[in-house]
Every structure is written in structure tokens, then in C-alpha cells.
Amino acid sequence: MGALLLLAAAVATSPPIDYSHPESWLCRPGREEICTDDVAITIVDRHGRVKPGKPVANKVPPADCFYVYPTASLDPTPNSDTDPGREERGITVAQLAPFRGVCRLFAPVYRQVTLTALRTMMRGGGDTADHELPYADVRAAWRDYLARDNGGRPVVLIGHSQGSMILKRLISEEIDGKPAQSLLVSAILPGATVHVPRGRDVGGDLKAIPLCRSQAQTGCVLTWASYRDVPGPPTGALFGRSIEAGMEAGCTNPAQLAGGVAPLDPILGFPWWRGGVAQYRPPATGWSIAGRPQPTRFVRMPGLLSAQCETRGATSYLAVHVAPGVAAGPAEQLVGTAAVGDADYPEWGFHVIDMAIVEGDLVRLVGHQTKAWLQRGPATGK
Image 1 (tube, rainbow, N blue to C red):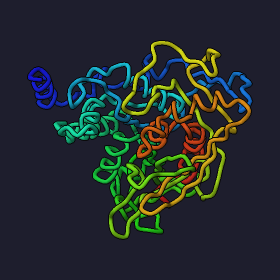
Image 2: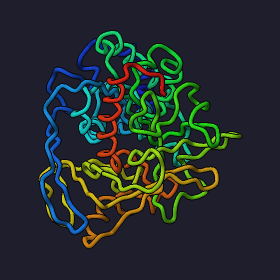
Image 3: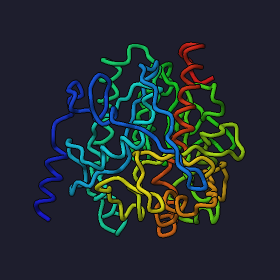
Image 4: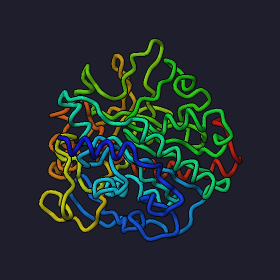
């Protein structure tokens, strides 16, 4: 225990990260790294039939994506160190690499609150993590990106869970109503509550940046918390809830921003979420569906999922319907209760795959929004 406390103290008092050094980034343009790895996709339909997906275009896209990965570190300390492990690298590839056909990719290393600390808190232990340190790191990386890399280019902010919470604060303090807002194509913030006045799209946590309601809209935010449609989120749901008077958690369906039910386009990477957050363990090798090894890291399953935003009490959420299809094995392995853990951890729902279930929709949406941004020039959300 003493050794862990010393490690924690060393992390908390370590100097600021210098983001002018390439090693301070998991991904950035102009070098070979995890985000330039193979992102080939296998398409598996509802009947279990397999075919190769279309390759990602090899081009320099007009926009940038600035990404902050979710809680993933398995370091034994409350805050992670600056040497990202296989888990941080893996989730970054899974969530960010599919965007490389529509934006240049920037992913800073940051000293996040670890899964180790989260598990301790879930089991009733104390919170010894430094919650200011992750934000300070990401803010420094953002400022470095603006100074050295942006050059007036449109930018998309992408986070999930802890990453979304950090980016929401960054937007509030560094972008909302400030000059940098004109660069914003959109901010993708699933797994963290973005408050809006009930029945409205702007005016809560963010004063001048609204929720996205059209693929032609820019300078806006996408946010959602995903739960299985039946039984839906429990009373103690951890995500998508608001207890603030007059406020609700914003919900936007990336597959159909105007509202209503829409089919989703999931791009699922290695099923690292198996068993839910308490059982998070990256696989040593590749993976299989229904006993058949898959030739690619990513799998797309058209026709598997559909969703719409719904409100139940204090919870606004993306209600996800899973179509079993003829081949129940593939569907169950990809988004089944055993794979995702929503049966054992109903308060979490589909949190661990918030991004994956709409990844294809998000990639297309970023392309549409970037085109709209370029056509009208820097905007402020109208």
C-alpha cells in the first residue's frame, strides 16, 4: 500500500507534459503509429454471412479530429502515467482510427483517472485520484494543437466517458463563445451528460453551442447515453440522467439527428468490454464470431441495431434495439448481455460500446458536417 501511495504522489507531482514532443501523442499526422495500422473491416450480416468491407480511402482529409480516450488505464495508481499501455492504445484504435478517412487524427496522452481507481470507488473505497490533472493535460494538448497544427482548419472534438467529461469542460472554458468556436465542426461527447434546458437544444452546460439536429449543422454537439430498449435504463442509471431543476440530459441519435427510429451502422473492434467494466480485459490475439475466426480487427453488422432517443423519468437516452436475426450467435457475441455486461451492470447499459454502435454513422456525419463547414466557412452553430 505504501508503494502505491508513493507512486500516486509521484504522478500527481510530475511536471507538465510537453506536447511539442511526438511521444506525448498516441496519434498525430506525419508518422507511423497505432492510428495508421490496418483498419480493414469484415461485414457480417444478420444471417452470419461474411464479406470484406470497403477500405478506408488513402487521402489527406480537410478536417482534424482531436480525440480524448475514455477510462481505460490499468495502471495501479489513481492517475495513469505518461506511458500508455495496451489498453489505452487499443481503445484509441477502436474508437478513433475509423475516422482517418475524414480527418487528421490527434490523440494526446494524458494522466487520466484509471480503471483501478474507478473499481476502488465502485467497491466503496475512497477517491484518491487527482481529477484536475487529466483536464490540465488535455487543455495543454489542445493549446499546443491550436498553436502548432490547426492553421485555421475545421476541427471535430471526439471523446467518450471520461474523455467526454474533459472535453465538455474544455469547450465550456476554451471554446464556447470564444474565437476557437468558429473552428468547431462538431463535438462528439457520448457517455457524459450535457445538460440543456428541458425541451431546448442550447443554454445549459454550454451557453452558445447547441445540440446537433441536422447533418448540415456545424458548431454543435452530439451526446447520448445508450441502453437496451427493453428493459431500458433502471432508476439508478449512471448516464443520461439529470437531477438539475429545469434541465435534462441532451440526447442526439447520430444515425438520425432529427429524431425518430433509425437503423445504426456499428463498427465493432475487439470485444474488450467482455463482462462489463469490472471484467475489462484486452484479448491477447484476434477474435471470432460463432466459432469462426475473423480476418480483420473491425466488424460491421448491418441490420443488427436500430435506435431512437427516449426519455424515462430523469433519464434521456438512446434506446437501442438488437435484432437477433437468424444467426443469434454473432449478434449475442457482439452486443449480447454476456459481451457488454448490461445484464450484470444495468446502471451502465451499453456505455462501453456507446461509440462502437454508431461508429459508421459518426464517420459519415463528420464528412457531411465538414463539407457544410467548408461551404459556408467558419460558423457559430447556425
